[in-house]
Structure formats: structure tokens, C-alpha cells
Image: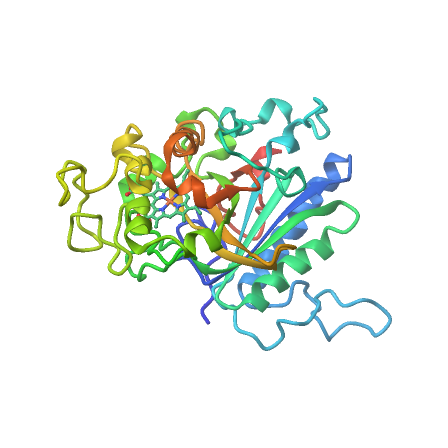
Amino acid sequence: ADAITFYGEHQAGIVTPAQDRLHFVAFDVITKDRADLIELLQKWTAAAARMTAGHDAGVIGAVSGIAEAPPDDTGEALGLPPSGLTLTIGFGPSLFRTADGVDRFGLAARRPAALDELPAFRGDALKPEISGGDLCIQACANDPQVAVHAIRNLARIGFGKVTMRYSQLGFGRTSSTSRAQATPRNLMGFKDGTNNLKAEDGDLLTEHLWAAPADGTQWMAGGSYLVTRKIRMVIETWDRTSLGEQEAIIGRNKGEGAPLGHAKEFDQIDFARKGADGGPAIAMDAHVRLAHPEQNGGVRLLRRGYNFVDGSDALGRLDAGLFFIAYQRDPRKQFVPVQRGLAKSDTLNEYIRHESSAVWACPPGVTGPQDFWGRALF
Ligand code: HEM
């Protein structure tokens, strides 16, 4: 029920212990006017500060205005507690320069090198209509109504300046981002987030999560880069796979979440350990081996994804999977090489399909009421 502090050095919603619910949205900016964009960011920031504290989106509120005007809050969160709401903004590469090279807002020279469009990966089955976008907002909360209310009101405030490109609801966080949290399970039934970067990992966060002035883009110092991928699970095939095979694919056991050949969830992984058949206990193409820092020059990600079920498809299969969310200091050195390795040989690929993709620059935190999201960019 608690409120999470909105102001700070970093945006909330990154190392904040992952809440249970997600409403993620990507917008396209339709105004061509730089001043309009800045004004929108100012209005959004003010509304976000209010809603994360448990207040209405506007100063007047859902039911205190004049009868003749639409209310400045839609009302469905009246009486609900803040529910751990965080709102985190990100800027897509197309905000800086469109795919056909147009610099709409005079920002082209300000685009961080780390905000390169992601390359194509083997096996990608991306749908353009749910990929990319100029702006994103990640709303996380422990009550879905609170998360949806926040996104709805930000979209309402943006009317005429932005259009919603796509949005994704998620339930059941698939990662723990704090050692105080038990590790949740994804829809494959496995504990997910065991070996994640966590809020308590001070020095590792400096090294792997937060952009620094030395990285070359001053306005991003204290920010982080976000990669979002909607990953559909071929649930029916997975469910007909034996327990032993499932565990071999992930490289951990299903009950405890221990690395194969080890006893406990948080045992340090020893990839040299042998299994009963004399081969490696964790297969060479198991997910945790390929994704592990040891295989990737030591790089880490802060994963913060959510399960989704968007009903069922025309063939009567669950339209379900993992909305993958990962924060990092530089996707070119982190997500991209890790995903290249996974795309090439992960046995999990037979059971998943990447359907959307986007990369975002999430600016540093808002320092106080006079500051706004992305101020240093302008
Ligand atoms: C670890 C599942 C996609 C990166 C894990 C673990 C599971 C899992 C069960 C072990 C527990 C843990 O340490 O968190 C999945 C599923 C996916 C998926 C079901 C797709 C639907 C990805 C993608 C990436 C990724 C796309 C990055 C490109 C990682 C990393 C680890 C990990 C870095 C930690 C490895 C370690 O250090 O031991 N994943 N994952 N995963 N995954 Fe994934």
C-alpha cells in the first residue's frame, strides 16, 4: 500500500523491488513542435509525482471540478492506496531522428551512442506495430487498477500530442530485483531472477546499470538503458516436454531453482561440474550457461520482466509469455551480445518467439518539483 518516492538521483521503477503488476505503454509523438513536447513532459512529470504519491492526476481531482468540464482525473483510483506505483519514462531512438532521417525536435545531435537501434537477431519474429516508439512509460504497481489508472491519465494528458502505439499488461513479476524478495516464477514454471542484478548490489549497479558522465552523454548520467521484448511462449509444446528435458533446457531444477549438479537456489554456479553421465551437469546450450556473465565477458543485466496472457489465439492456444524488461548501462555491450549468443544456440528457442522489440534511454531521476523528465536533454 506504500508510496514509493518519485524524486531522486535515479528514476524509481528500476531498482525498486519489482511490484506485481505492469502496464507498459509506447507512444508516438504527433506534435511537430519542440515546445509542445517539453510542455507535455512537464505536465506528465507533475501528474506522475502526484499519482505515485496516491493523489489524483490533476490538482482539482476527479470529483471537485466544475460540472461543465471533464475532470482532471478519471476517478477509478479514488480511495485506492498508492500501491507501490512507479512511473518510469524512456526515449526511443526515433524521438531523436525518425527512420527516414527527420530531426523533428532538434535532438539528433543529442542521441546517445548507446541508444542504437537493436540489430536483428536470428529467429526474430518481430511485429512492427508492437515494436519501437518515440516514448515509453513503464507503470508498475501492486494493484493493476492503479497501474492502468496512471497510464490512462498520462495518455489523456497527452491527447493531441502523442498517440498510443501499443501497450502491454503484465502480471506476476518474473524477476526479483531485491534480496528481500522471494524469487517468483515465470510461465514455464521456473524461478526467474535468481541470478539477477539486485538493488543491494551497490558496486555492480555502478558498473552495469547506471549511465555515467564518462560514457559520453552528460544528460543521461544517472539514467539507464532499457530493452523491452515481448517473448511469446509456445506453451503447449513446453507442457508436453518432460521435466528432465525442461530442466536441461534452463540449466536449473524446477523445484528449488538450484543450478543442475548443485543443491541450493543461490549456490554459486560451477559450470565445470559433471553430471551423472560424465558430461557437464549444465548442458553447453542451457539457458543459464549461455546467459551467464562467464560466457559474456562479465556483463550483467537488471531483468524486471512480467508474465502476460493476452487471451488465446485463433488456433486455441494461450497467447502467453514473458514481457522481457532489462535495464543496463549500454545495450551494445550488454543485451546485444547476450541475446546474440542466446539466439544462436539456446535450446529454449524452440519454445519461445520474440514478437516485439524496443530500446529506450531512461533519463536520470527528477530532483524536485521544479525539475521534469528529461530536462537536461533540452
Ligand atoms: C536466467 C528464463 C529470456 C537473460 C534465467 C533463468 C530462467 C530464465 C528460469 C534462471 C534463473 C535466474 O537466474 O534468473 C527465461 C525465459 C525467457 C528468458 C523463460 C524467455 C521467455 C532471456 C533473455 C535474456 C535472458 C531474452 C537476455 C538476452 C538471462 C540472464 C540470466 C537468465 C542474464 C542469468 C544467468 C546467470 O547469471 O546465471 N532466465 N529467460 N533471458 N536469463 Fe533468461
